[in-house]
Image 1: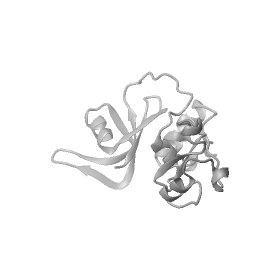
Image 2: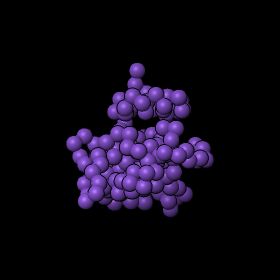
Image 3: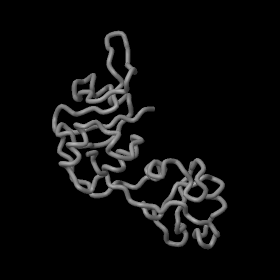
Image 4: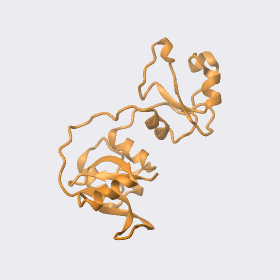
Length: 179
């Protein structure tokens, strides 16, 4: 199912939701479509709308400031673009660099995406003990980076001009806006 970016009334990114939820928000007049997928439409007996890619809430929603993106297995796979950190093939599992049995935790810096074969081969060892090198170093994405990665966007160039301007004014810790 397609992911849709939800913006606050002030154009700050809030989260991503399913296409179905985005259409419901637009139908209930709680949100407006800011950007849609070109050439795609949602049609029913009484409606005909563009498939929303970005929607903006009509009313401002006060959200507590979140300094860190919450860790999740899905988030790790998205961050690593579903590529195995050991061999580069398609990843379907999450591997702990320091195994949980040895005190490793579920954190951004201790987990990487891995294919099932490499995850099984590494087993309950560190990469050095298993003789496996990491192709990429794990990192902790900012909340804004996590939203963009979830949408499949890696830089400000893929964003519309009105969103890059609002992001540049919002936080300096986010991905660089286009010039």
